[in-house]
Image 1 (cartoon, rainbow, N blue to C red):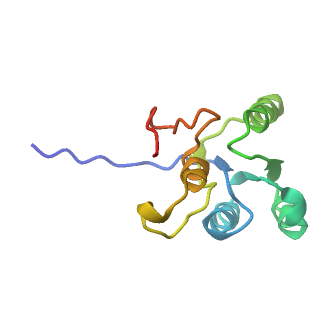
Image 2: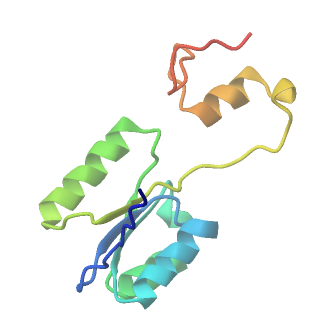
Length: 132
């Protein structure tokens, strides 16, 4: 038995929280959402490196927050800012990050841990796997 599901877009502007907006997909998606009348809360690790982009987003009614997704304090601050603004996030695009093009055997332990969200104990976000 086949079931067809249809997504119905709300008839109102949505609030988008997009991480990693200083370039690439995050920036493109930010511009796209704003061009369609949506409110965007854009984030990047260091907004002072892209002041023209911050001005662009804010001039179209958006917000730009400092957010390093690996920093618990930045995450707490971003949540507090959003809650205090009275806004609700309708769409979350967790786009922050980077890539390394290499065979896994060529990666250093530091590169693996940095890309995996590993903590001080070397535990990746997917469990207690150790790299030797």
